[in-house]
Amino acid sequence: EALLLPLLQCKRFGKAQCEVVTRTVKDCLPPETSAYLVTEILTKDVQCVGGSLDQKKAAASTGHSCLLTEPVITVLQTAIALKTPLPDTTVSLLCSSLHRHAPSHCNSLKFSNLLFTVCSKYSTQAKTHKDALASAAARVQSTLARSIV
Image (cartoon, one colour):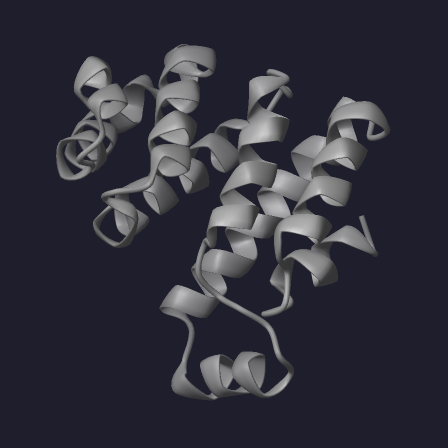
């Protein structure tokens, strides 16, 4: 995980890097490490989005990206599709992140797929976040999102 997290935050994280990380998550990481990776991605996202101006400038100056990008969404989708056991706090972070990023990913099929997977794989844990997930689904424009609501 010490190698994967900095790679995921790099602004130059693209399709090739995404493929390597996705295969690593799917084929090599034990479930507890995958859960840790998901938690760290979401925690870093919250820190960047909700962080101070100095934190955002520091992230930008080191070449790190704050927002959930399409490749990072793919990595999250892979870990979550494996039904990696996640603590309630991580599911809460995930639901909040989906709600927060729905407007910027309203046309993304990958984002819709992630939202659908969270609702289906973690339905018991996500029940307390039903309103946030419904709001996120309402903002997404894909056909898949309509089936979520």
